[in-house]
Length: 369
Image (tube, rainbow, N blue to C red):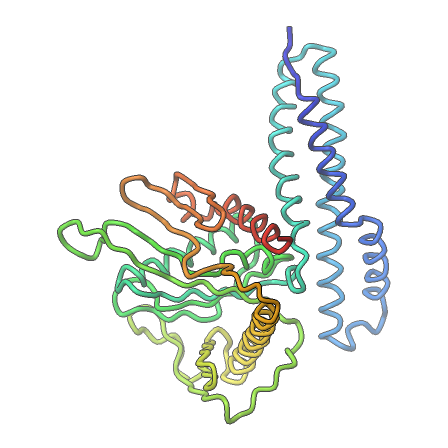
């Protein structure tokens, strides 16, 4: 007798999928695609290159969103048919295929459900991620490099394009800092929950006597702005330094002073860029990132002031949001959500989806509270 009682699981998935469709508003999505397709088909579209790129990019993103949702609906329909056939024919091979498809759909629909929670002002944009080493000497700079690889591997798993914009290598191991851009729909909304202080505890490979070392690294995530952010930055408020791009060990990457470092004197914010070929391009890219950071800082200050006036000051993220234990218990624990992973190696290899999903759900609950 074939045992294939998955009707309740499919019913639950169908209910979640219906909620996702309602939030996504498939009809509105199709209307947007029709409008953008018409704009993309205009004979004079590429007379304005910037506008053309925005139209084609928006069209591609919305088509991908629609395909993602409709493909899941089709697979749910096919799964119900497969289950019915397997039950009627008592075909164990078809039943096993149905179980496998159910497991895959549970993950896909779970991911889609998380994406529907990304409704912030800039959540649908690409992201610029900056990692900086903190206290901990060589262990901290090594940890910063481990985090950079972790996020690059996560992006690679999802086939998201990544552009490394700046890397400052440490004299010993690892990196002092790095900045890279992840180009994908909702990259900012997704990765923004990774912002904060990360802590690593392990037996240091750089010290003697098997000494346990605790080190820190900071992760900052900002959205990519398609247009220049309207934040005025007076020339007197910035210091611009130019230098030659360099790789590990001080090796020269190019022979001209094309890399640019901009320091915003009132806030102390520093932005470095060395990915572009010319000093002018690097300066423009650095200014865009600086303006975005200043805009977000302004919004944070306004939000804090509103909370203060309302008398509801509460800690939100805190100084330390996640700990990585590489000795004894071997554990990665998010201190905000309580989510734990007992395999740090897989996390450092880019398996972050569970931690990120828990962070997005936690943030949504905090906002609603």
